[in-house]
Image 1 (spheres, rainbow, N blue to C red):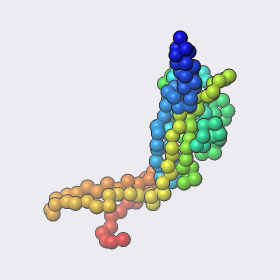
Image 2: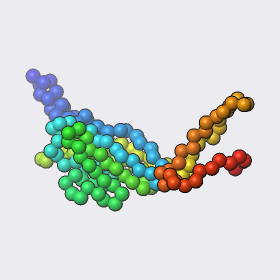
Image 3: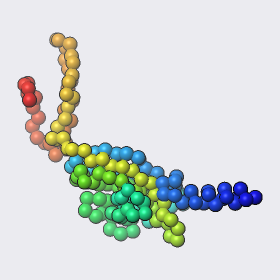
Image 4: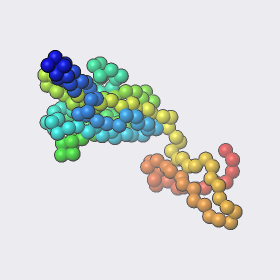
Length: 167
């Protein structure tokens, strides 16, 4: 009987540990500086009517809330939007800076109990110069080759050209 009580107690304690199953998200995300990222935070049906939030910090207990679903859902370059039909809320961060790198939490407010949440690590990498391609491609003489050149949307209406030479 004592082992049953211990099992129930431990089950209750570990069911309230943030990141223990009711809220789920990616674990690691990497994006270039200046870009944006949208992070899905999935939750169980029992949280449909709860307030959701996004906070930054390594420790769950001391993370700093950036946006919430019960207040203006934009703050600077960060927004939050809840889709209860799909049981997911989305956090979008725009104009990423390298100092945005760090630990973040998808959180669900639980009145009268410990909030539930899941953490992820965001890495903001140095930006590329707006255009990127393969650094090395091989082809047979006399054959055609396709070289992809990926560019940022801000260059959509600019003239594109190809040059031969060394950098």
